[in-house]
Image 1 (spheres, rainbow, N blue to C red):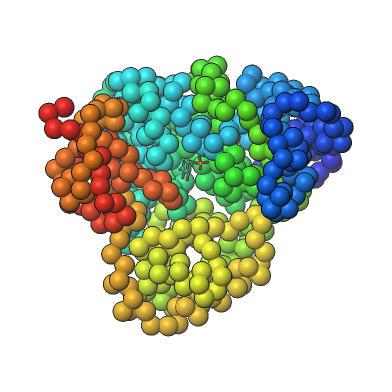
Image 2: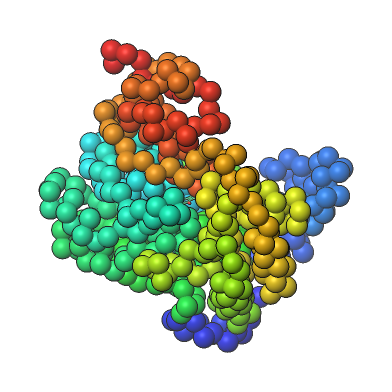
Length: 481
Ligand SMILES: Cc1ncc(COP(=O)(O)O)c(C=O)c1O
């Protein structure tokens, strides 16, 4: 399935867009064999009837795993899977790309397992995703926390400044890696170019969790990808904004990186399922191919233009505010974080859902996050803007104060014990109110945004309580440990 496509993205990548896994899966579908192997539902013949009706015979008969029907293998990468990973590397501007099942979570775990070790000090931003913490708990490396700037009006973390990284590297010469998240969940962008220059000056690798930025390489109105700005490794959740199926992501090693990519590959082999879904792998292949076609590039242009349209409409609504780059931070235009005077984000989320049938990406005590996605039409944004205009025109003062729960953890951790030591220490489960003054033995981080409220080894204080409304008990390190 070779298709000519007109390419006008930043890199003029290619004029021919191939999707080898999609092609191999199509061939396998059109040439069925007598199947005596997994998956045991045998092309959908042995599944619950209602489920089969719901998702269709074709989807079930395409549900297969690697090794069979000339589809190649994931570990080691062979056949169409190897070819698809190479095409992805080329498209994203990487030396090497690994396809990830279990999302960017798998990529972060593999980075930690392969590239960090016990006791090694690593700069990590306080608002990192919990998968980074899990990785460090496995390897035993020690985070040196960098707290981004705060955007207090919005109760969110902002960008990380290069001078913050430099200060930490200057102070502690044992730090051997920098691992930052960019952009934030709400779309705030850090100056990765300057951070990378600092890392090069101190000769430490830079890892960027760009889970929410996989479209950046394909449109000039979006920020520049860290792969172009000097990062050594980057993870992308293609399923979040890139058009692939849920839980599929990519891990890229940059062209001039000296990171040990063989170790990363070995860690992924250990972390991944031994029965990877070909449907999921094909959806990654298809998403990459789509982003390289004229149609895919148009979809990104449309998402950017829809975001601009929505932002313009929102600017005209009294009592409604949106997080913008002119607040002093660069942002990704497609992530629109808004708030309405007198109305908590959670309440706004419910009104949108119940009264208008609108589901947003997430809600905090302050506002709601709207993603302007590839698949949305202009009419979706007109409907959303009209709904918001209507909601903002009503008086909500009395409702606001009903919302007592805080959603975005904005705390600077007071570390008492190492992450791994506390996680594996003898623990006890106690009432949340009795936990003040004790040491957390667990990661408390709800998704979204998956940013930790409490880390293992962190002192629990009264400040944590407003974030813990959904918890009755906490795991703490047993006294005397
Ligand atoms: C910054 C960041 N990194 C990593 C992840 C994990 O991504 P995935 O859901 O693809 O495993 C998330 C998920 O929300 C995230 O926000």
